[in-house]
Image (cartoon, rainbow, N blue to C red; front, side, top):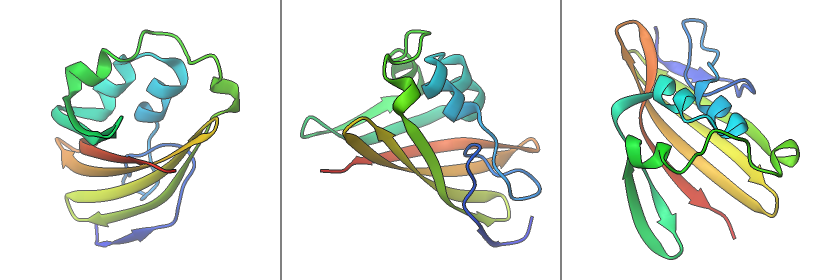
Length: 129
């Protein structure tokens, strides 16, 4: 895949051959099923950010343990939007805005094309406000 920026999409995170994105990570949040995260992330991935004033760095298994197989009660009011995807041959970055009630997050993903499929290598997030 050539280098370049893909316009924002609304259906997921990982870019496909066409530059569009797939949806496993978004499905995990929407359904509460951590199995979708395992499909989207590499097993070595970390999820990092500031939580309650302290830096956190969760390995994928710890992050998946935060989800219990059911959607959040306010899931119908939540929104997720892919803001950008930039592809550089076998690596890419993507940013997503998530609105969860009064909270807004920016997620930044580092993706790698492994065995012909895009997987999330790492995620960093910022909680606004």
